[in-house]
Image 1 (cartoon, rainbow, N blue to C red):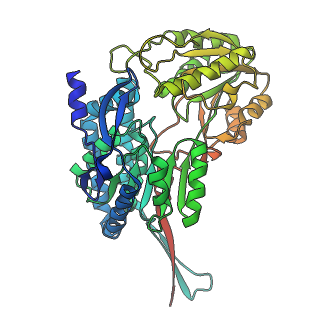
Image 2 (image 1 turned 90 degrees about the vertical axis):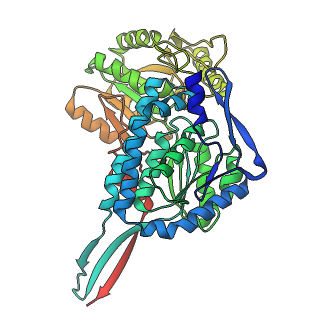
Length: 485
């Protein structure tokens, strides 16, 4: 408890606006809870719409000077933040575990992953370039140059409170954009601690502003419709994403949307089953299943389905559920009681339609929002658990007969974020990867996220890319200059 208290006490609980930590208008605050026991960790400022406007004004005021700052200096801020974040990995990990629920081991993995976006984009800051060429007629020289989009609103989710911030903040800093960040009300503490760290390494006042609030729509909509804002980036549900895109249309904002997923996990008859089960554990249980990249539908060839399901259920059933701060715990609580109830409802719907439960599937007694790792077999294709994003530790398994059926069923969703394929046939890898309507495909691996790769989806999973060489382009505008000789 002493360690927990000391970590919480180091986190600012006010709004960061223009380099100052300030109270919300009227002094309003809200509670931040620990999902492992529903206890109150602390209270943070609850911003009102006028606070959001103050934050945008600060970002707009700082934009010109930050734009003119040398790329090397912008990169050095990110590099210093990368190093300090890794030095404080234990504190950031404990903070994430306390407010979000994931285990300490997984939270430390997020620190490593999240910090890498700062290192990657520190190196990209000095590689922003245009081109020079003669016009086909020879009488004019064509020059293209890149510049920052400008003030950006970043709305980040609760499930990866550090990494979903760093992969937006990193390229924005590198490109020369100022920001207003609105973290999820469930997990505001990690972003507040990250903002304090960026201040510490020399990020100038007004470049990063943070507003925490329980009134996301009331605070964000006026910012989105303000002509001073030039870009909106959001990670979260498709339903909310649609509303934000509609709001952004008034100002014709540059928009990046990383939305929901319904990832298929395909296991072909020639797959290495040991590797497939290992991959399934990673793809399903990363972040307690509360990830848009989480494997949502397990489609397994009928010849190996029984053996795969048996091994998978055995591994899932061996996981220990509990408070993520405790040693030996593999699976922490879900974020809220509402989230747990939604997951269980999907399981009950599948069972009522004929699915069988190999392991899990019951709501445990006691405090906290815990749900056991669950494997369902004989799941009908019409079950809600196959159509909706689960966001929990539930794995529905169904079978297919041939490659064409596997691809057809995998693509039978409005989402298109990530798909997983397990096979030892190289030609099949190419055929299936090309046929899948997804922005990312993991082949014989259960993890695709990498700061050096472009993360993003198609269809109702959104548009735009985060990470990789492509990530910084989301924060840059292209200007063309035609110069006559």
